[in-house]
Structure formats: structure tokens, C-alpha cells
Length: 172
Image (cartoon, rainbow, N blue to C red; front, side):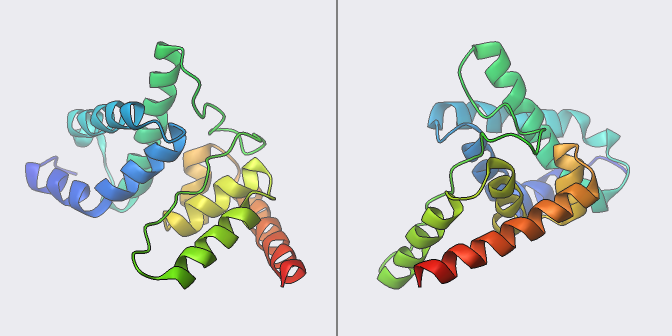
């Protein structure tokens, strides 16, 4: 795949916001760390774009770079961040991102309820659901990003969904 400025701009336009949100969760909502990691991520993307052979895998490639840049940032800086990202057994999961819902109190109430329900799940379950539904990643992309087996990711997602439904029914 030929690395071009236009392709880089397309990647940034399509995935820039999602990658920044992903990094924000990895940086435990530290704005300075998020900015540093985000800049390093896109610098690496630009530098290594020529190594991307399959444009269909660009999304998981981007998120892998973001994950690695976050891990590198926290290992160099000595700050505590989400370093257990590569392990689905980690109990150290990102907090759900608060979405700005404007003048929609029902949407805010639903987001608060979902955040409370997500808090009852294990770190691995939160991570898989966050990547699956907030970042619209396929199970294969999540497996590639986390370094876990596809079937493990599938099981974790299924188990988390069942638990989330059960918790929601109990609260109703």
C-alpha cells in the first residue's frame, strides 16, 4: 500500500476523534498525557504509514500504535496509567467516557445508569465492551489489539453482555 499524504489525512479524519477518546481512557483522563500520546501516535502513524500493507486493517493498526504509545509514555514517565491493556485478565480497566448530551436529561440519566452498570463488570469485560461498542471495533480487531485469542474475546463479550442485562433487570 502506498503511503500518501491524502491517505494519512483520510485516516486522521476517519479515526482521529476515536483514537483520541481511546487514548483518553488509557491515560486515565489525564489531558496532558492524552495530548502527548495522541501527538506521538500520529507521528508514528505518519512515519510508518508505508509499512501498512492492507488498508482494511488500518483501524486496528492505528489503535495498536495508540496502545503502544500509551504504554511507552507511562513506562518512560513513571506515571501510573492503564498499562494492563494487553491483558484481558486485567482488573484495571478504563473508566467509561462521559458523553456530553446537551439538553437531553434522559440521555444523561441513561449514560449515568450505564456507567454505574459498567462499574459492576470486571476490568476485562469493561474493556471489551468499551472497544466493541464505543469504538465500534470487531471482535477480531479487539483480539488483535489486546493480543488475546479471538475466542477469549468472544467469550468475554458474551459474558459481559449477559451480566450487564442481568444487572439492568435487577435495577429495574
